[in-house]
Image (cartoon, rainbow, N blue to C red; front, side, top):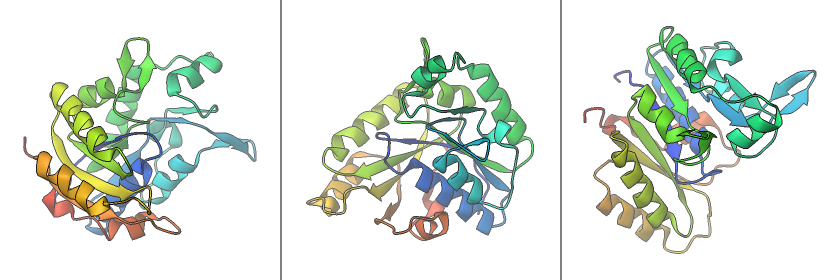
Length: 229
């Protein structure tokens, strides 16, 4: 498997970005690629034994064997479980995009591939004039879209794909992740999205209990990733 870096976004928050990001890191590492996950911004952290902890950050950290300092892989770990620009304001700690980009460059210099997980959906504000889509564009990475399978996912998937293209970025593939196991016509929804997106479907992940990067990786086919524009 060839090494590739990517930016993982989703059709919404709580849609499975962390699960898919971890699965990507796990798959790359299993193939012998020196890969690491990076969640530059995480909101919703609790103090445990004197240190801030976030479930998503720890899940991504555990997905592969390479361990880099959290200050690099998550330069902004914020306490309040709200939009990052609001969480940052509560701490009087404005987000500086240049700091995020610099951290990515330091991480990238130490590995062969970086899986960068966004926060929330595609257009989450980070500053008054900069959002997650701006970050993805500045990093210049191909995008992998996580589509949460629940009512409304067709519309959300197609709108997000259009927004990615509008930023001049390459949609390298998409993953269908089961959010609502009781969703009616889930197969039809996946087929409808696949028929309308030129990017390949990289896998369909069922509801996992417990969720793990290794378990999710079993449902991915990264050989389908379109790394060329």
